[in-house]
Amino acid sequence: MKNILDELEKLGVLKQFTNKNKIIEAQKNHSAIYCGFDPTADSLHIGHLIQIVNLIRFQNYGFKPIALIGGATGMIGDPSFKSAERVLLDNSVVKQNTNKIQEQIKKLIPNIQVVDNAEFYKNLNVLDFLRDVGKSFNISYLLNKENIASRISNGLSFTEFTYTLLQGYDFYNLYKDHNCMVQLGGSDQWGNITSGIDFIASSVIKDSKACGITFNLLTKKDGQKFGKSESGTIWIDINKTNEYELYQFLINQDDDQVEKLICFLTTLELKEIKLIMDEHKQQPFKRLAQKRLASEVVKFVYGKEALQNALEISEALFKGNIIELPEDKLLKIIKTFPHHEIKNAKTVLELLVETSICSSNREARELIKSGAISINNLKIEDNETIINNIKKIISKFYIIKKGKKNYYLVF
Image 1 (cartoon, rainbow, N blue to C red):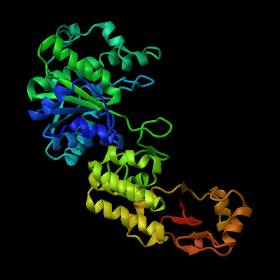
Image 2 (cartoon, helix red, strand yellow):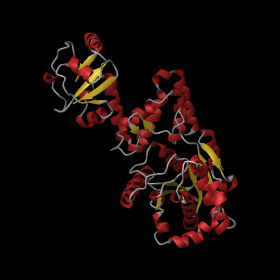
Image 3 (tube, rainbow, N blue to C red):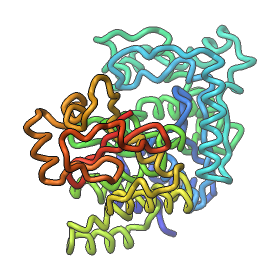
Image 4 (cartoon, helix red, strand yellow):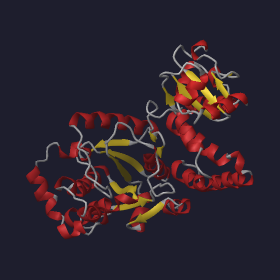
């Protein structure tokens, strides 16, 4: 029988696991496996795709995936390796976020079971929790956990200190009622995962089959978590990050990162990934690996039609004829351009300097003279061209192109 751990290790995804034999046994018995998602925002972001993709991988090996939405834990926030206390969210906001994230997960994994951990606590009072759960956790044991110890010097409230107890109790409920033997998460979740395993084993079920797995966090070169661009977080809600933005974010990743990203963010098998990388290395300037990465992720998150939209927009950008795009696609691409408002400028020369598109009158004149400035696909040949004489796009704005690749939105 093929072992899921072997595949994960070869892909470079696997970080730690508690007991290999228990994981293999859980695979043989088609047990459930879960991953938690706290509703601290109204959308998952691209970093969450690692856990989504791994749930699918485990499903392909016979496990039954469960997504646990933290309707309860989201009210507190996980302190693990955070530099400061989280801002507490209102209950109504958490509920709205929970509903939206549940919809996203079900779209990405249609037959997954989704559980809201608020159900575990709605009839449990604080005294019962302290007696039945809190009694099983030794303070010294908790303080020795890296995810908690790392926060002590910066300050850690009792509220966040109890988070690991809640996550342990979550695992216990899923183990007891849903035949869930395995919890997975990022490497920053090791302390929380082992807390649940120890709680199940020592306090409830002596011959426990509970086990855990963590994955390497996807980080950028500077060590920061992957998922942010210059314009902010890359969400998987199309209304927050559209298909073109997602495609461009991924296609612009560096060569030394792209193989890892394919392994982390797609369900492609290792054989195919190696073929992609071999072909890419023969002609790296074609960015074949980045294109495959971007295509796979956009198609997975938003669907085939959205991928076609992203490809059409990208092609128009490459050819320099973006204003010929349909209005809906044009609005998606201009969202990514730097935005500038016209204040006092009347001529193109004045506009280029006022918006800092050009650093000086001299640079603006040189670019206009060389034919490097166009507005709404109209090449500007005269420094004194009056802006108001140029027809606006959709009666609202101008698109300025500087050189071959730099676009700006002016309104």
